[in-house]
Length: 154
Image 1 (cartoon, rainbow, N blue to C red):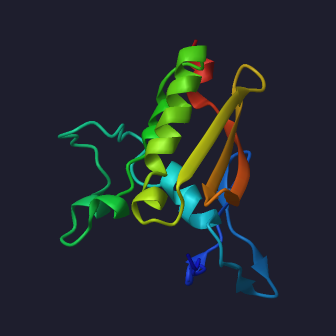
Image 2 (tube, rainbow, N blue to C red; image 1 turned 90 degrees about the horizontal axis):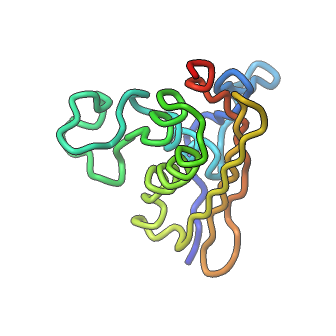
């Protein structure tokens, strides 16, 4: 399998208060790996879209003609960390939601395994480790430090 680098994406990266871009010598840094695709899979779309069928809160780009299932941004992961309290059960649900939001890499035959590991750091900080493997080799490995927004509600 030949991995073609993603071309044309702006590099989005995780920060403590959301995503950001890099500007180097007046130019926006581009992404030739999976960084932006993974970031958008986890944090793109409508944050209120939990992925349920017949959901009226789907991101508008998902209903455009010609958009297939692997191209939809659903935000299951984001809906959990922004809308539910941080409990052991919800951390496990967030890990599964992240795998579902990233399932397109398996559907597109880019990878054959997605591993996620979520850890509470403080009462409102959460780390999600995402590892994507293809043919036994890691092709993506990154941790996201997330402010679990619903943690302040409990």
